[in-house]
Length: 52
Image (cartoon, rainbow, N blue to C red; front, side, top):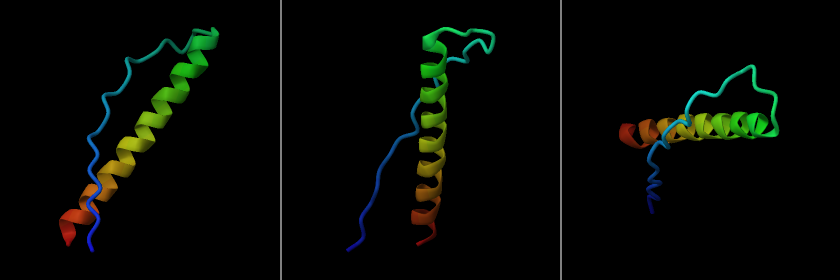
């Protein structure tokens, strides 16, 4: 049984100002990194499925 994992790359959040030191800033960074790693994972999965 082949499980097909479908995932669209999420849009990247707008680039945040690195000089900003508010609480929102760290949350933005977290979201940005999470989306980046998610998109990279999706990319790898998609490539692996294409090879089969």
